[in-house]
Structure formats: C-alpha cells, structure tokens
Image (cartoon, rainbow, N blue to C red; front, side, top):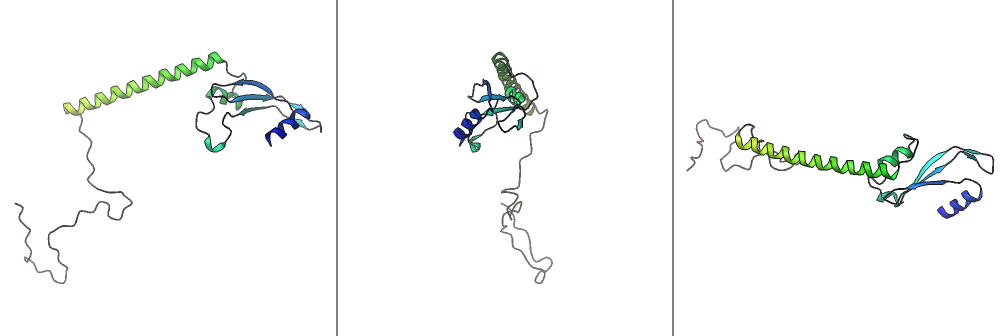
Amino acid sequence: MNRIAGVLRRTFGIAREHIGTDHLGNKYYFIPEQKTWTGRLVRAKRMVEAANPTQYEYIEGSIPMEWDAWIRGRRKEPPSIEELLKNESYREKIKLKAKELEENDLALQIREYEEGLVATPAKTVAKGHAAATSFGKQDISEDPTSTANTFQPGSWMPTSKK
C-alpha cells in the first residue's frame, strides 16, 4: 500500500524533499505547499519515516529531541550533525554527574545513619499486601479466648512466658 501511495504521490505532483536522517535511521521529509493535479492546495508538512514503522515497537526516544522540535514546528531549521553530537555529549555528561551525585548522597546518608545524626527508617510491621483481607492482622494467638455469654471475671489468667 505504501508503494502505491508513493507512486501516486510522485505521479500526481505531491513531492517530498528529504531533509536528513538521524543516527537511529529515521528519515525526515519536508513537503512544500503545492497544488495537486485536481487543483487542491496541499499545505506544507514535515514528516518522519520511522526506521521501525510498527507502532507496537515504538519506544520513547525513538526520535531525537532536536528532530522532534523540527517536526512539530518549534524550530525553523533542521538540526545539524554538529548540534546533535554536541547535545548528545552534554546529555551523557549530565547523566554521569547525576549518577555521581546520587552515589555521594547515598554515602552521606549511610554516614549520617552510622553517626546517629539521622534516625534509620522505621521497619514495616504489617505483613502481606494492603489489598489482602488479612493485612495487618496478628497471627493467631495460642491464648484462650472467650465469648460474652460464657465469660466469668477472674477466670482467665495470662500464660507466663518462660
């Protein structure tokens, strides 16, 4: 179907101009404003032909931010290779700094726990999942229980723990 549409587009005058390709293999096109053979006016469009065209395999980051901004019209000129490389190295530096900062924060937190400057987080007492019917219930006790009908004051004494 795409081949037929492409042949019809080329045959009847709707031409697209290849603007660039990113490092992921996505191809970017510009369709200038033009009239079709029927006289209909087609406004200018920007489009991407994905390297992986199936929708269910799309993942976040399949289109670089710079190209996404060009596609959506937030920038007039398409990104240059130098700009893409510069921004990619900047993003990698930021990731390394964030990882280093997280490790330093974790080390500081451990040191504060050891020195007693900060209380350690409380441990969860309740067992199981909150959606379970027995969430937070204590285990069955071995101590005898009584009902209101048979209870006699002073008849039950707690068991001694040895």
